[in-house]
Length: 163
Image 1 (cartoon, rainbow, N blue to C red):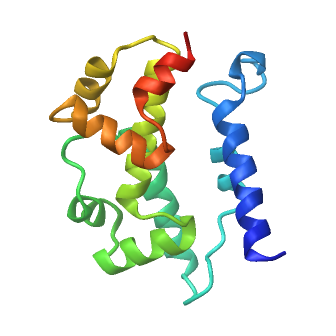
Image 2 (cartoon, rainbow, N blue to C red):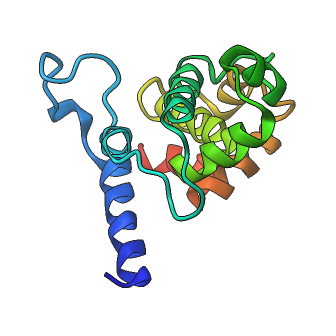
């Protein structure tokens, strides 16, 4: 498979995950907040090309990811805090997380925050100011810029599409 085809396949999976109608998914089959993209990534945890990550570090990095999935809105998150909690040095945390999951630690946190923003806008019909405040942004403009960087369109457009 060529890199272009791989990018197209990843794009197709991401678009499916973003636009899928979750109302059709039975709650008893997938309890909690089911996300097909996260499920796919969960079962494809393999280090990318580069140095080999020891199994103990892979387990710690997976624990970091699980912790971030639960605590991505915490104000006290920092690399130092995560290193102390999970017994990793900063190099192993940053390089290992990126190699294993294809994203930086705070790139992943940002992704989780924007998924929450998307859910609040679509499902709970919150306005942009409320979402920005909930996520801890200093202004709605900063939130809108971050949302647009990740998704390629503004939260106002997403809200307009839902009407």
